[in-house]
Image 1 (cartoon, rainbow, N blue to C red):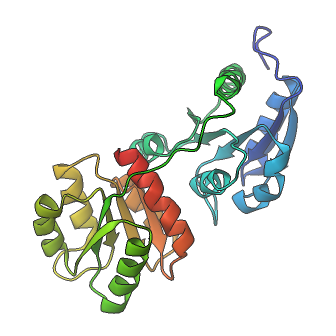
Image 2 (cartoon, one colour):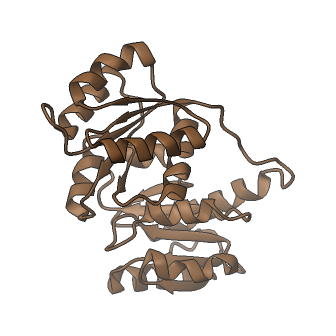
Length: 261
């Protein structure tokens, strides 16, 4: 039940994204009771058709297929900005990843109904207070270190990163990458998971120890969610799977550089 002092959300259209029926229906009930119009979606991809109709999104973080972060990236591609609140039961395990992503708020499960409504009201106030005429953010050229032992893959990534306008160096092994970091001083690292001599996750941990704020994007041929969760739990900024979606990679690098700056 809602606290009688909880803010009204009358007239607000909210998209609720959760692959679990019980969780989605519970959120829908709370928000409807607060006066909001709710559009439910069972997946991040299904949510895409409703983005133009809503003023705010409440999404689960980990879902089969595309995640809440993937949905946030899709929202960021649009001219009309919609605040995204993420709810998760993994807040402690993925605190760094959640902090780096530009979610409007991060809420822990189980969700307190009153706190949820207060958070939504605060996010909507923040959004309305922003200047509608403000220009979109831009990023300065940065340096990207690619750690990849497969020559063809390394060449593809090097060409793409250079085309994006960034400085780029390539290291074929984790050992070479760790040697290059003090010299090249990268702003972002693209790190293959499967490397000779030293595994990608070991390199990730070494990089995190030397510079906890250096964004590291993992490159993997495995799209299994367990692998993704393990990389994120070790402190990776994000991950990209082979074969590459270069447009998504470009947006990912831009987000990482904004975080770095």
